Amino acid sequence: MVKRLKLSEKVLRDAEPLEGNSYQIFDTDIRGLAARIQPSGNRAFTLDYRFAGRQRRMSIGRWPEWSVTAARERAKELRRMIDEGQDPLAAKEELRTAPRISDMIDRYIREHLPKLSPTNAGDQISMLKKMLDPAWGNRLVPDITKSDVATFLDFVAEGRPRPCKLKPNNRARKLQGHKPTPIRANRMGEVLRKMFTLAMEWEWRADNPAQGFHRRIENARERFLSPEELVRLAATLDAATDQRAASIIRMCMLTGARVGEVRTARFEQFNLDYAIWSKPAATTKQRKIHRVPISQDVAAIVRQRQLVVPDGNPWLFPGDTVGQPVKEIRRFWVKVQHEADLHDVRIHDLRHTFASLLVSGGASLEIIGRLLGHTQMQTTQRYAHLMDSPLRAGVDSVASIFRPRPRVVHDAEPDQRSA
Image (cartoon, rainbow, N blue to C red; front, side, top):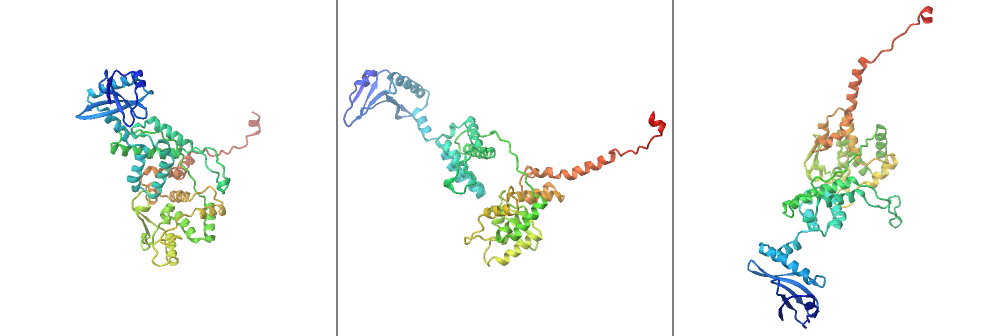
């Protein structure tokens, strides 16, 4: 049934539904505006129009949530858009199919993260899935603003309650208070900036709302082992029953390498004749081949491992799983911390200590950067202040020339003392 009437509240209220069929009542004032009567009795406003030779029908809203007056005003707006050459239904369909943040996360993980190291990629996946997706997952990519980015990073910087590590039983753990995580917010901001840069390349949006995000102050941890602590560490490693893990710690200290680089080292990487360790790009943070000289002590560790590792096993430190290197040594390091009284020392602090010993030996920042595999000079600059000692010695030597010397004052004659 097709009718044409001037739509009113009474017309819609009195319209009788037909069993098994829906029908439209077209408005006589606005061309194409109609009230659609469903067999269930529901009523809704629609707009029929023709655009680029195609017959289109767009839903406006349900009655009585939309009054006849409101529907008529909306139909006028849509008619003006059509007269200006715009297809309102196409714009609505485009909005419906616009990529969401969850889509951007999935594509970022699929296309970009394989280019990064497994550790870095895993850390980013954790942040995206645990923090970003729950907060923004259903939002459209073009809708995110700079204000949204700032608010979200503030939320990340506040931190969240975490289980108390002092109670090993998971059921007995109690949540601690919020622990601020400003560095985590900075890393999240860098991920967002990269993601939206890629979204621009994918033509998902025209600008980057994370560009120039507020970066929190980071106080780099500076923990260097003293000579006494190094002696205690060496003694603890010598007495350890797990000499495989102990050798990993020794190589970290003697080479300044990251623990992951040492764990995954292979015999083929070492040229003992020339005392060189060639780290493949797959195991380095900078994703480049890194060749460094090694000391005779490190070469001795490699030779000792050749004696204890079965023939045919390529790993310098094979793990308990066949065909795999050692996975982790955190439990061993916790035991070392306790026995050597190094409770606030991380394994990565051995890398910083290696750099500090190079500085005390007169090495330049350029040499230190090359040995540690830094790709940016600013990363090595954190050790610049350790070079103050020779500078201070030079300043003191100049000052000693002009330092006032003690004057010998002789006793005066009696008559001069009385004067």
